[in-house]
Length: 236
Image (tube, rainbow, N blue to C red; front, side, top):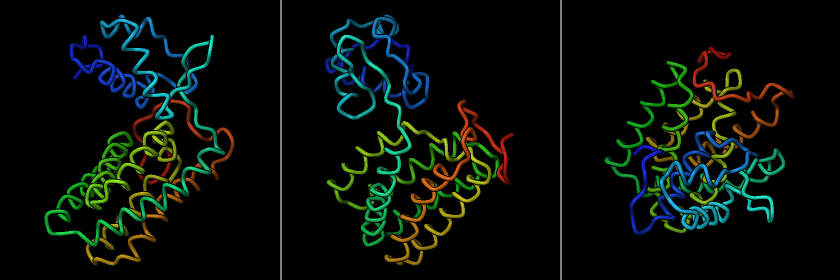
């Protein structure tokens, strides 16, 4: 569905929220930027009321900030916030993996294997955007396989906020290769049905994402949306 198509539906504000969320995640609405309600209303062919309701939804999710008398702004995640978010997400993702492997059957393993094969392909081609989106689907699949709806909800809520950082850490030299190696260890633990190893590997995967960001020299983190890198090191 095009983000520019007019919206006609009874649950209008929810569809508007989905559209604006997509613009935020794709950085068409950049972190820290003002949300031009009038322009978006014209783009989607809607009135101000569903737009304002949609922005309230996104504010509750932590994606935008509603500032009295100033307007609405896309949330910018600061490093101290990421320092708090990543360890929490690591524990939750590790728990998802523990629960998933306990319930894992041949069909579930085949689902993870297929997604991992896509990760291998995207990494070999240095396709960061495709790798990132497939990685999201992989982690969502693990959460789905856990069978714990409260855990799934907690992870989903945090993931919405963490996506504001998008794939920044994957653009750092060597990080794409290291991420794939971490996923290989995760898959090995899934195939062996090793609960403890899987928990440790998943937490390590999330913690290394944060460490890559935290250790990056000032000015090294990219400000654009490069979608490809040399899988052996720097950007293409």
